[in-house]
Image 1 (tube, rainbow, N blue to C red):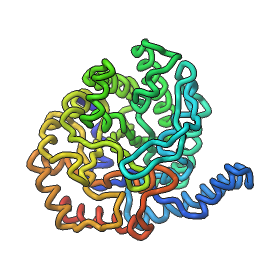
Image 2: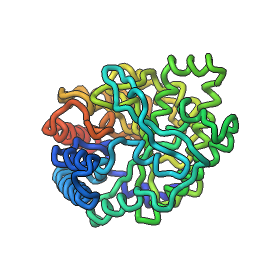
Image 3: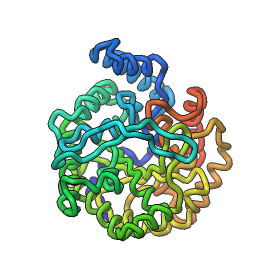
Length: 377
């Protein structure tokens, strides 16, 4: 499908062939401040001062690493998604009895639920958080705002709620409109680049979960259509100078993961039907994601595809020759001009972070740039 993004806006990013996914490891100073605030040892103003200082430092590091697109590292969040979602009207965060089971880890016991009709809250913290990043960068790079996909609310335990009952059409309409309002509000704050992180599409990629949906009398293809509708509603009437990337997130907590399976299902039923997406960030760091042959399905989709070949989960530094070989294989299915290189995911989708060192984190950013200089110079 096509994007309404203008050629001039796309041209601003044409030479940018590497991107990180947004989140970075938190310094101990920041972690302690967040814990102290939770324990009422410090006031919110003190926490904000610590966050601001750490974000300023991160911007300087990104600048030193030649990142042309920068984020605040998710430094104001405990989670990559809950902190954002629970600030909508009708969505509440709450403590659960047990955390989410990843492959080799269990997250903190927390989740969100629907408590009322969903809509955007005019005082959503994303606006002030983005504005700080925008002003701190001062035009020497692009400020990228990372947000969870509205499709996160299509996971079964949240879409099955008392407020909407069986009326999924109204649920989807309200979700799409709420996120559309959020995107338009961010744009009004100066945001020109948004990255949407979608774990639900990884969920649909996994045979185990599609089978479970069928057992519960829900057709996965219908769910895919809901996902398309929700995102297209959220991006309807998108300003033509706003660039949008979509990252399919397969789970990222303490270097562990949630979902496996190739991209065939979501390419066929979702990605080829989405509008106004300019870049896809796809994880290809392990065999869990399948091979590159599926990229041929995106031949007639205008969006660029950034290959997540560098893991944010492991301490091992990938070999540049191996990364370049993988890119050339992918270029057999999509032109090299439509490809880019990215990290597989963020380094710290939650405040705990992955099991890697700060030094390795920065080395992996440098590796991306090194490879890109050889491939796309």
